[in-house]
Image 1: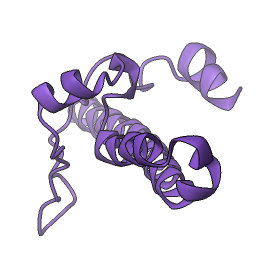
Image 2: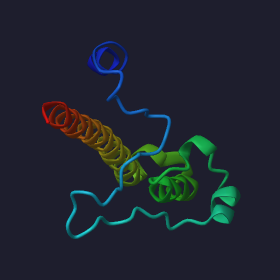
Image 3: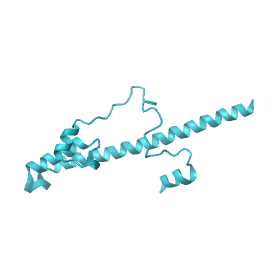
Image 4: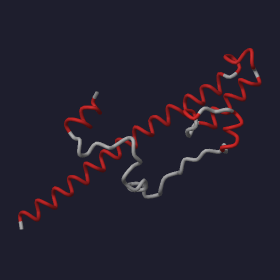
Length: 127
């Protein structure tokens, strides 16, 4: 509810558009840079494994391990593949947290840009 109020009612000018990529340089504020997120699986491997499109994210490598474990331990997949399922769920959670942090970062940078612009306008009017 808080993000809806912020985005549509109180601050529509500084609310990030989550349907578009970030507007600021991803390395701003990171003096040593950021580690690039990569996927080890190829498109051919994903197609061969029958991975649905909604699962093809940064956690697809863990999902493939889970699928392989389920194939190898078919009747007892719950007890045998608990570790792989846990790894996949942890990856999904960490991806969600990272997306939330990126949203908040974009919001803070937009607010900062607006403050700087307002300060410059006030200085121009004061002269």
